[in-house]
Length: 143
Image 1 (cartoon, rainbow, N blue to C red):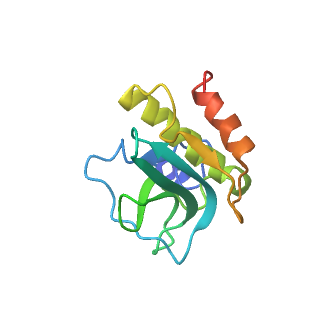
Image 2: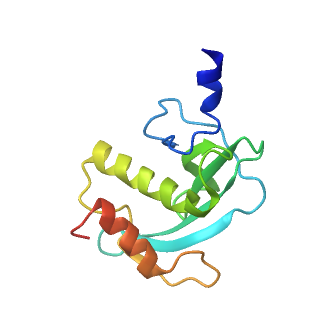
């Protein structure tokens, strides 16, 4: 029995958790400056736009790999998806965290599109707008 539970930390098929799955949320803080994945903006209506930045990196305790969201509507980084550190393959970490978060967002909010209006070209971003849009189309084919 214990052995089965210990596999959780090494099972690469484990699904990450999202803030939708955690009623109480998590009290994660990033370890230093996480890696920028991409920047985007969200239109809330005429004259009301929100700048968004998505990052990936460990939490301060180095216990989890985390997808972080930074918005000009809030202070600091918010953990929006995470998995125990080392569970997800490094080369797939960003993609798995993003698509898991988007899938849960689609289910919970019955959203017909991602939580951004447009992906911006950002210097130093790990993902290009084309890559982000291709991933988003896996969840929202009409996007």
